[in-house]
Image 1: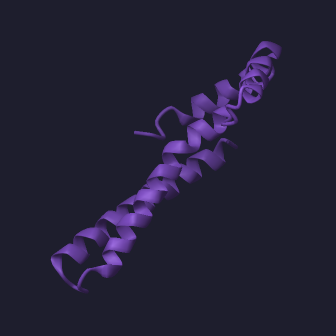
Image 2: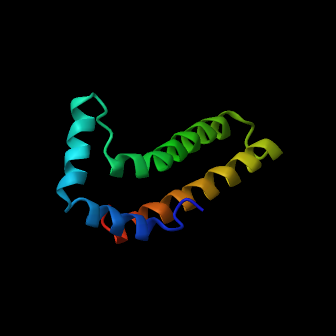
Image 3: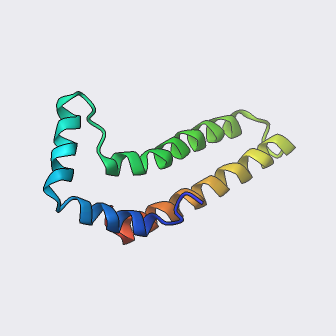
Length: 96
């Protein structure tokens, strides 16, 4: 669901970045100490998903090999990695 509409969001962002009033808004936010760009904001959920995947992978590595828990965490990690790769591919396709 995260990647749904991402291409349109990137196109809108590209259009907005050509407008002086939008660039002024971004520079004002930076002066006020808010340094996260809109691109960073769009990518933030992906970074969070990557961190959760790392935690699940760590749990998987500490469970008994071949156990139901290890199998379940393995599936979680595999699924998360698949989604992360899909989202990254979608982002790179639209040059975020």
